[in-house]
Amino acid sequence: MSKRTTLTLTPADFKAGRRNKGGDCLVALALNRQLGGKWVVGPGSATQSGTGRTVRLGLDARKAMIGFDAARIGAARRRPARVTVYEGRRSRKVTAAKGAAGGGVALMAASGSLWWIPLVLLSVIAIPVFIALVMNKVSVPRVTSAPAPKPAGRATWPNVSGGDPFARTRGTGD
Image (cartoon, rainbow, N blue to C red; front, top):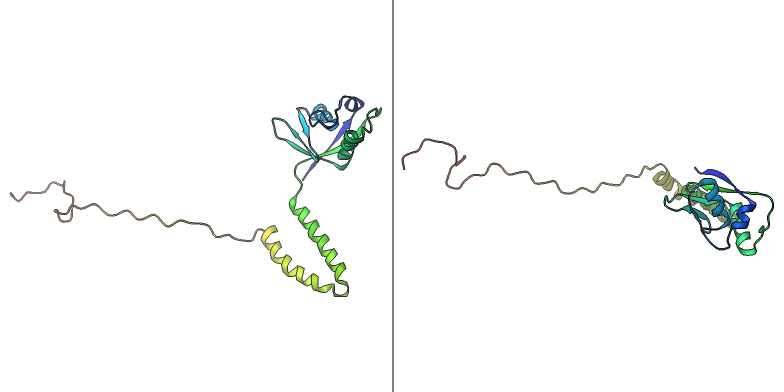
């Protein structure tokens, strides 16, 4: 789940921002002012120096940054602008599900009157994949090593029959 944060790009940010500089970018200055720390902005995300904290830029933030860097749009902006950034990572499962659904729709549209064939094939493939990935029902055998050898019994001396050579016994006088 992503946390949404709204940044306010002030006229001072537009004035102090430098084109094509990751640390002095328009969005980086707003992040420095509102969230604290030193931020470096890339094409789609911003990273806080020292902590490694990362935020994703929303569509409006990317448009503002591209407009500022490429065309210097808004350089003399008099009113604050609001843009969105998201903390956290985008879920890969959601992205994969959207891609699979889009591919299924395209395949069914391309097949025409035989729309049921790809549907059956996809369901045959999708059910085991769902069980394996989403429900985590796939069990992987554990790698085990051979059991350790059992320790040998008590050491015996070749010239003493069945016992401890240091035990006190009655001598035979030899």
